[in-house]
Length: 627
Image (cartoon, rainbow, N blue to C red; front, side, top):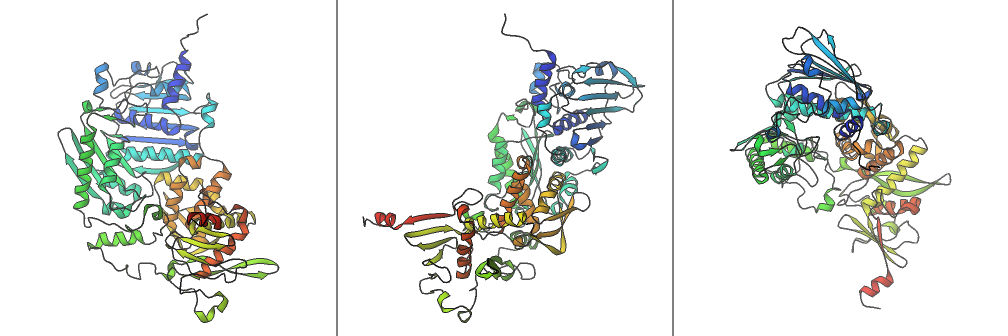
């Protein structure tokens, strides 16, 4: 009996669908590519339940005549290739001919179309791979593709779909890319009968940037342009003060197609070198036009990866264009906190940095040594952090009073501190004070605490220790249903991109449980009415941006408990003292005292990094050759 068999067509189509269609956003992408290739000037996308229940894409393109519609759902049927040589001269977005049959294999799909100039239209159906008969339909010129019950016959694939807010966020991201790449097309996106965006055609892509990312960004966009024999590059880049915590705002298009390319990413990074803080990313909107013969877009089924014949030339062109744009801008280099080593830059507090950079940019001034004006920059005293103070007994339980201290301020005068608790300023060493059975302790490099123990010493990472303390405090407060937040005197409005707007909405219940009260406030805007007390020194917008970065697409798909733990971890990290922050002896003492409460969990921070390194006298004596 033969062991090699030819797979049935239904199985072949499902395999093809697995390569191309993995979520509703994939369906939307393929259908919009077909609409653009058909010369559409308007494309309407209508969704229900994040695309699970319904995806309908309607265009006013050239349409499909009855004869072509009869084979549209057949595998590798395409009007965009005539022979093998055309594979190396791709001038359209779609060309493989597998999208429609792949979609039909895993859904209940229907195409209704009327070719331009035809008297009437026609309809064809594909119900999970079973093709229906062609029927006449009276419809406007153009094409309508309707996809219902996606993955109804592939339950395993359906099980891997994310929540509705996450799926609609993916789709919004797809539409955002197409809208930027084709500003002359009218795009409309409707979800559950609510208009997500309605973008009439515009002349300049900068107008689309404003529609998605706000007037402020458009006002500061820097145009870039370069023309070479094989390549033309145009677009816009944002000044360094618009930096982001990830590279999601780097939009790169090749011949109208959104792509990801490592050489171009490297060129962007190199152009902004010295102008951004560590682990911050610039915003770019780049549009490359390359001769089709100079690039292979047939590398991957999703067509987001390409292969250039001359990668070095592409790298140099992008680098030159961006450097020229930045050099012509008012501020050529904004390098802040350059003296901080890379491991510490993550922890250094950056409140006010955006304002400093933006002020430099807008005023066309040179970098100054003094701080920004007090009316715009938070003062040292306003940038305080709440740290544990001395414990006191209250009804038999240990109570920790919150006190406010400042980065460069002695916590209290000598007269206010009992003699037994005063710091020994001669050597910068603090005696044990109110902590029983403890030796001396002191801070080094404003980052680490050296603590004397009975049989040696501990070196404590102040950020990691405070982070794990806050983590367990938040957990206890949630379990005890104790309030974590305070109402904001002036609620803060935050404008987001469509995909981030839906991601935040999907996190609403989790945010509420940790004291963040967020509500919708118009299209793609949220309002924060309450915020955790422990994060009072963190700008609300900065925290939301960091949250979206940390809770990426993968994070949002995890279970409820995992998402909540991740959110608590982010809050603890943001609320904890930072490496590089000077602490008074009361603050150090309170931190060491609070360590007792979570002693069994104190060895590692929520990220798994150690909080303490312990060295015995024996180890020290061995190192100093005393043994």
